[in-house]
Length: 187
Image 1 (cartoon, rainbow, N blue to C red):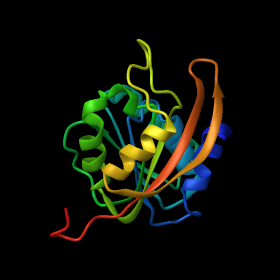
Image 2: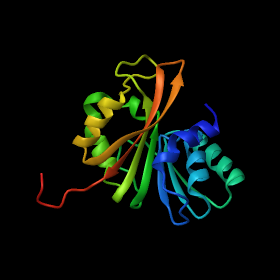
Image 3: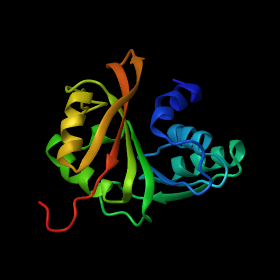
């Protein structure tokens, strides 16, 4: 996959360029999808990048600064499975990161991460479209599994927005969902 493939996967889930957009890339690594977000959101956007590898985050931030100088990147060396200090977000991306979380822990984590979004905020997931993994991708989830999990976590309007063939595990997909917090008092 290259930059144009990353952009194509995310494009249907990212609104048109918004100079005030505030997004996060969780499990950002070297920033391949951070670059795609920067390209799609345009100058004035702020991207919070989160990963346990601070050196990878620094490389990603430097790439964005070089290629999209009007986009602000705020790296945070952290584990996205733990509480994060982030402002209310317009959207977030998790690309090839959720498959490192055990299946039994995913729903609670997704619910907590979705709560970082503003009402109507977008949760974009990029994952392998299988439910059985391997040593390198231990806990992938197919789109059907994601759609069910997203609903349990309070996300709505779950949609498959892109696919890309993978020699590794058949196919990678991109999905979008909206955060629809329940009014207090609703279960």
